[in-house]
Image 1 (cartoon, one colour):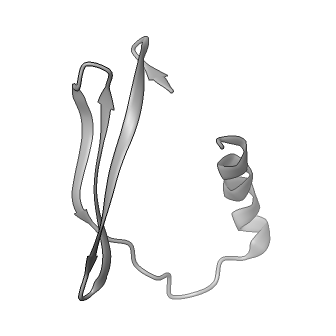
Image 2 (cartoon, one colour; image 1 turned 180 degrees about the vertical axis):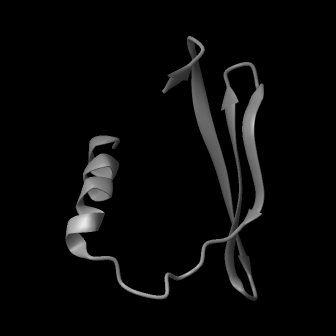
Length: 66
């Protein structure tokens, strides 16, 4: 991807803890300028299932981006 006319990259580090996985990540450009940084990020389980028709557009985006 590009932003402001320069390529950007994602760096992600997964860390296993007693509570599960957490992630440190950042988005940088080729000169190392940081655009976004997340430290100790964790996800959580949704309390209910998502209806398949509602999930389909997101799944399509994920496949197209590969």
